[in-house]
Image 1 (cartoon, rainbow, N blue to C red):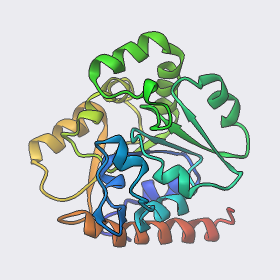
Image 2 (image 1 turned 180 degrees about the vertical axis):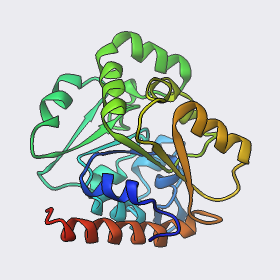
Image 3 (image 1 turned 90 degrees about the vertical axis):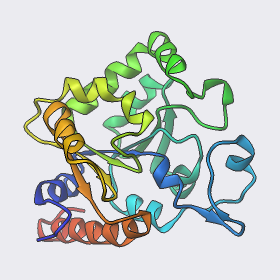
Image 4 (image 1 turned 30 degrees about the vertical axis):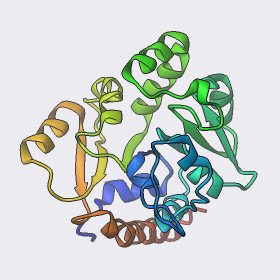
Length: 234
């Protein structure tokens, strides 16, 4: 039994019943020859020759059917370059729905991609404008939250991007299966309780900083692989 990863989460991942969300903390694990990755300016998205980190690779190893990211960069989809991966943004709802039952894995760029700066969602105002223009995408997100265990990587309980997702979490607060936020240690107990009671999100803490995330994800990957092998799953 793991000290971090609950059996329920391992099983949900093994059966590919999870919806994985990737936030800016995951992009921050990438580096180039000059040092740490920064995701604020377009030039840093496109010109730094940043490479996916081991953390990106471990998340890919989990082989989730659907990965949603609020990051604009192309680090994760660049790693998932095989034909069995399809990438869409929030304007592609019909294609996403059509692909959910297909054999390919799906990457959803919930706030757009740096390839098309006109569709990037930076602010709350842009977010609500996107909701008005593409309501079918947000209806789909609600459905996915209802039918999947959601696992947040690279976010914190105080992350602005998470605040924009609260409506989906609130709508699924009575789910019999909890969602999970993976974060470093140091969160206030009252905040942890609030997220659990209000949004059905359980916090799993892996260490004092992101340097501890890699080894924790290696353990999670191994547990998922072991359960799939034990139960004869591909």
